[in-house]
Image (cartoon, rainbow, N blue to C red; front, side, top):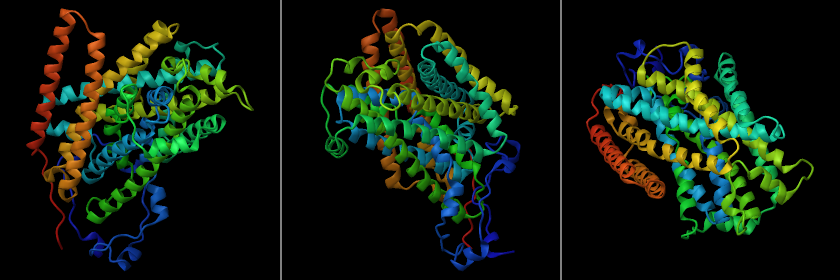
Amino acid sequence: MSQLENNEPLLINEEEEEEERAYDETEKVHIVRNEEEDLEHGVGCGGAPPFSWKKLWLFTGPGFLMSIAFLDPGNLEGDLQAGAVAGYSLLWLLMWATAMGLLVQLLSARLGVATGRHLAELCRDEYPTWARMVLWVMAELALIGSDIQEVIGSAIAIKILSNGILPLWAGVLITALDCFVFLFLENYGIRKLEAVFAVLIATMGISFAWMFGQAKPSGSELLIGILVPKLSSRTIQKAVGVVGCIIMPHNVFLHSALVQSREVDKRQKYRVQEALNYYTIESTIALFVSFLINLFVTTVFAKGFYNTDLADSIGLVNAGQYLQEKYGGGVFPILYIWAIGLLAAGQSSTITGTYAGQFIMGGFLNFKMKKWLRALITRSCAIIPTIIVALVFDSSEATLDVLNEWLNVLQSIQIPFALIPLLCLVSKEQIMGSFKIGPLYKTIAWLVAALVIMINGYLLLEFFSNEVSGIVYTGFVTVFTASYGAFILYLIARGITFTHWRFKAESSH
């Protein structure tokens, strides 16, 4: 037996074989390793595996699938509204919000790699049945709310590209077919699925970069917007929205599962660390690309509509037409460039939503089900209410915008139910072993989480104060808020006493 194979498992779960897994061993991407080369570099004896571009390529994929949540139609609408209302002044916040999102996603990846299980599975073990079921329902509601926005975004793009021939409800039905595309691609392996997402992200990048080139925004104002923090009473609401929509609850669950698609030998501590290193690089690159795409959208609308009468009326439904009126046709009409980018954003995000739904359902409930059936159930949960929404709101842009505000509120409510369990889990040595986060990392992570939760709390307070009136509604909101706050405090207190899992640390020899 070689020196590299002589260590005990880093993390041991006695029930591992009996549980639903994110990926079967045959589905995982094999990471090619040269044992002789590793021994030459002292790997396993205190040395670290040398950096390899080939290995980085093999680990590349999960971070880009995760980054789709930063580019979904809901985020694009936040970008265009921030640009139209605040100009270039919130670009610095977009950059730092993306950095905060990266921190959360790296914690999610760390949890998945170090434990070999994803967040939903760990929540199932660490919380009592009633709390677990509440968390599951909240995760499903967050997923459904996000998916409605994404499907509507795709349907709007299809309506534009068909010159209005296909109404929103028809676009919703077409978008629903991505469930079968997802299942078809999944049969050919995770790398084929990741390649399709790479094409969709590239399509978004090219489309919005083309728009950026046609708009010709001011380079100096763009640079000042990124480097100089500015905030005013007029832009505070959009600023809160920029931060609030970056962290998507279902994406936190998704990333901890996606990283398990690679073959990582948990018996070797340095192999786990190697995987974490490559995932950190890959996720950083992926979110940098997403930041650039969001920046393109924000600056295009900042250049075209800031300080105009249209600034406060632009939304996802009418954005394409306003762009067309502002910038004209060109070689290829900007209306269709926008629609192509929006369609790529909607399609990619709905497929990742289906993917996340499978992990969430399987993780919380731990029952085996055919993949096509689980994907169909997950898809139906979003498509059925979305068709109803499309039929009711197809002729009313203003009402559709109000619906979008309610869906953003739904997302905001769910954020603590993904963030708090994640932070509690990655902080516990009983669960993470030697890969638990240190005091500094832990402090920064909790400060970021507190900031995001407070910002979303501000959004909720402002929204309900404007929308809710009457004794009955006020009483309902008061009871809901009290229950909501009590459950958050319970999650924090329960996290302090996580003891269910027992792991054995790597032997020192």
